Image (tube, rainbow, N blue to C red; front, side, top):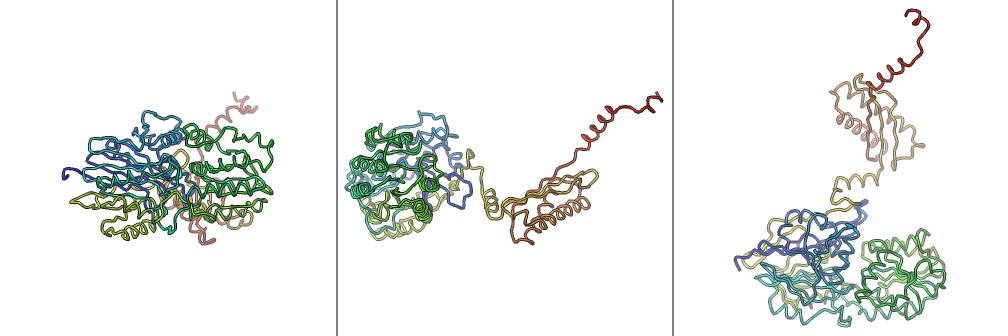
Length: 579
């Protein structure tokens, strides 16, 4: 055993929600567990999504044996399109997970290498040079969810992914408890376990209870039902389809993304619904309101913004009107609770009403505190590494583990970039791995950093101030009166005096530069920027982004035009007589 080098790398997914990616290294082979994304909060101006540090793959790609996926949600598969743009790495996952991963990669890359995708199941065990990898069924809100075991010479490293326990779950969703017991008998070195719902003291409602509640909501509705759900929550989609069929309603899928996902799931048998259940947007007028269900999943799985568009007549298909019931069938995170309240207010203003599943039932796709303790008691890991959750949740998970009898020294609270190396039977922090955020803005990968975000924050707070001046650097003078403009800073018409004084500041800065410095473009712009920033802050207590634009008059061009003009002028009679 001493000949083996075993490390657990926390690339991302701790002290945050989403963006799950961890890795186990055995000698010169690295096994990557999940590769997800997270959606940005309000502080990340203009950022589309955030993914793990791509430098990790640049640094270790030659050692990576594969990326092993637990399930098909974005927090598990969302970074794959960006990874596969740069690196050819084998991807392993269940049938549904692989189909959704291919769809994700196709949407971003347009080309994908299908030979990199490999379908496995809970019975699969893959042998590599230094370790083997096996899988086990878990319960989550999407079928085909699997836990992963990396079998090392020192014992198994178990990664749960997102999971919970629900004894009433249907067969394709049920955790394999016998398999967990089998894994425990072989010895579990370390458990990387989901912490997302660790602070929940009471059990999740069973999916059967929730299905009955959804059906009850549908039967009591007298108008249209607009369901806000996540396209990747297959459990909820099935409950909506079943309730619609039971109440003789047709279902409209509003987005291209959810259409593709539903078609894949129907084809593979993970969703059951008759094709006659669904209607096209062009057919809506054929049906009365009490015959329709509108399923809104939103862009990137975020339905709230789409509901707001419906409430303000900006949605491309549906507008909320009198009598509509908006059924929010997701459990919103704490970060978006304010947005849920704002959305509900807008729905009521438009004439609709709102019912929230989260108010009636405690539902989550993640393990409660009791579930986490049951898993620890079943697997009996030597070490515990709480993952997938914000810092307080990791600490709560730690305390739950101590209550089961684990020693505090055997539980590791980590941060992104930590690398734990097994030495003399214990894990110790060693050289960190790349663990920063990679921000995606449009087609750019990682080209937006803290400096750009700071500028965007300033722009959002104090706007931009643009100064334009034309100079003749040879004569060292200003050719034309400087022009100034602003956006998001002050209302120009009401601040003419400020604008006029700004022009004087610009002229003074340029003149001073000419008099005291050797000409340099960057120094000239810096002097103008600094002078304006000081002046504007003194006058307004604001710090807009100051953008100086300095142009130079082209003397050679002017002389050439003057010569050309002289050549074409008619000659005077006096000149002709002299000839």
